[in-house]
Length: 59
Image (cartoon, rainbow, N blue to C red):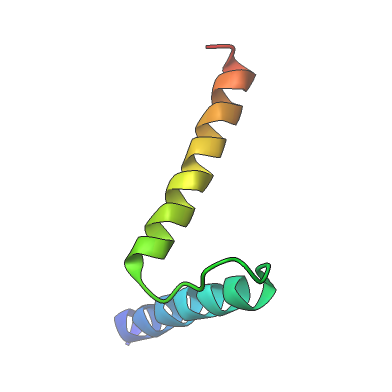
């Protein structure tokens, strides 16, 4: 029962997150309708996080 609940909760969080991102994004932003758009967004976010981390740790 816990596994089913966790699966449903994970699905709801993923779909809800995509919906929130799509509904609050600026008009020229492409919606999260395929994995290519999600990958681009994730790569951009990870690059920014790496740059900030390197700046904080002075690498």
